[in-house]
Length: 70
Image 1 (cartoon, rainbow, N blue to C red):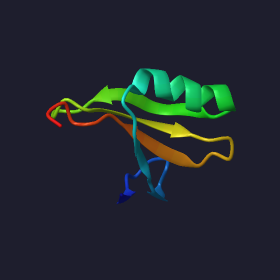
Image 2 (cartoon, helix red, strand yellow):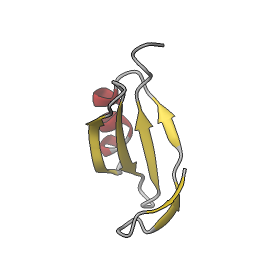
Image 3 (cartoon, rainbow, N blue to C red):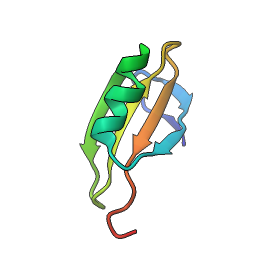
């Protein structure tokens, strides 16, 4: 996703990784490895949830759950 939000992060390419359990994935893959949470997890209108997280070099990535209908 290419975007400019008008607030940090101002410009970026964001990679989304699909995870079955976002509540388990965010703490394990991010905080446990020295990264941090930026946003979420937040519910989406279609039933999925997403979060933005940072790694130890402040690179941002997205986590998203699969569609409930899939």
